[in-house]
Image (cartoon, rainbow, N blue to C red; front, side, top):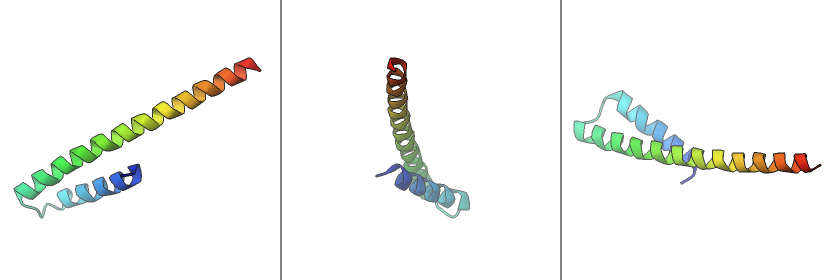
Length: 66
């Protein structure tokens, strides 16, 4: 699942919860799904941030050598 797909699914999950038209069991299931999606999105963002940091740090070294 891509970040965009996970974020869209998370947004849909939140909308369902906010609508308040679910049973307690359904709400709990949606909440658990939302927590999992949030963790997955956070992990993907952290990985992207690390990649950007590596690229920019590498680029700084290239500029220093010139």
